[in-house]
Image (cartoon, rainbow, N blue to C red; front, side, top):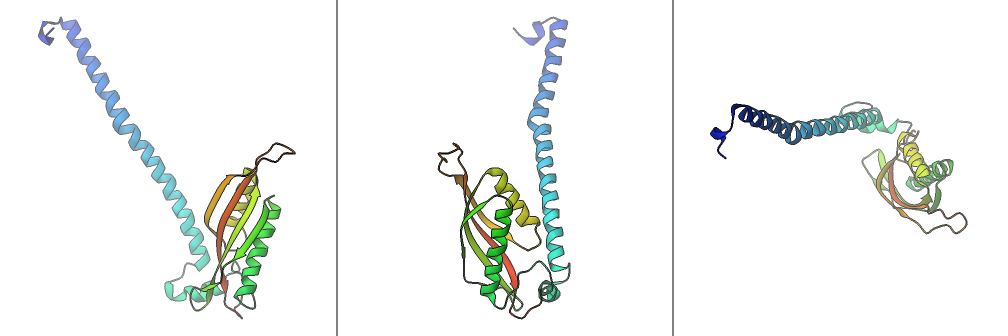
Length: 188
């Protein structure tokens, strides 16, 4: 039936229905996705600002020429007679935090330290551990917010074998954790 053949009342009803349909489509396909994307971007921006403020605190918010001097005096860096001792300090720190947060550290392997620049040494430890989700999250939070500078470079979490005694399935954790140390003889 052609549109012109409809009564005035039917035409008005179809026009109003079309307007409501167009408004609903504009909202569903345009407004709502834009709002969701904006919210995601604001969350990402907030996270990036938090990372930036932590990084500025680490380097003392100084220029690139002062970075080595300012980082060498920061209390969050590991120190030791040599890089091997600093690596052992990092392992000891990771083990202490793991125990404190009910994470069973099974293995910690250090890689040979690399010189980052004249004043710093890059440390890396590969760990294997087991825990429940709560312990893992608390451990990672402690490493992020703890007194020593550490960075979880990679993290792999999977379900481990079921414990026959209590029927629980712990999480098997593999992680690579990095930190920095001052060169031998440097101040902490």
